[in-house]
Amino acid sequence: QIPQKPFLRLSYEDAIRYCNDNNIYKNDDTKEKFQLGDDITEKPERQMTDQIGKPILLTRFPAHIKSFYMSRDKNRPDLTESVDLLMPNVGEIIGGSMREWNLENLLQGFDKHNIDSLPYYWYNDLRKYGTFPHGGFGLGLERFLWYAILVT
Image 1 (tube, rainbow, N blue to C red):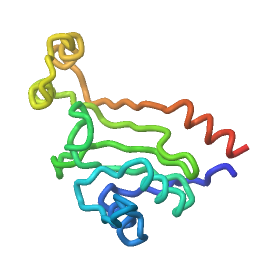
Image 2 (cartoon, rainbow, N blue to C red):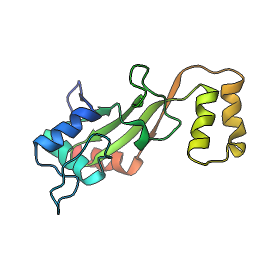
Image 3 (cartoon, rainbow, N blue to C red):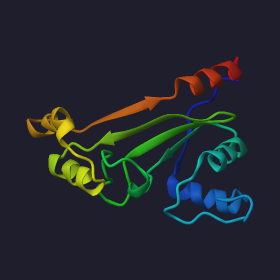
């Protein structure tokens, strides 16, 4: 069945609450519940998506579990301006975010993660010599095709 619009928009914090309220555990063996700040791994993420039964745009993840080049929320710098598209019976098929466009913030991210920024001079130069707020995404082609096959 072709998904109906609009897709459900669910913040990371609401997803944590949903999992805890619906017996979706961080660890099935120990029945450990999620805490804010935990990464929702693939299995519980898929359980949640399958229970809800429709596409979910999962947003506003904690910055410490996402890539440092993702922009931070202006009002909540502990969160990223990011989104994952989750599809029933498949899981995440797209992950996207606004990208950090401030050079100083980007260089701090390289330092924090002990990554040599020199090989990325061209990427940093884009910020140094002028850029603007922008975003990007990655598409899991295999998962997208899997979903397309399931729909037909």
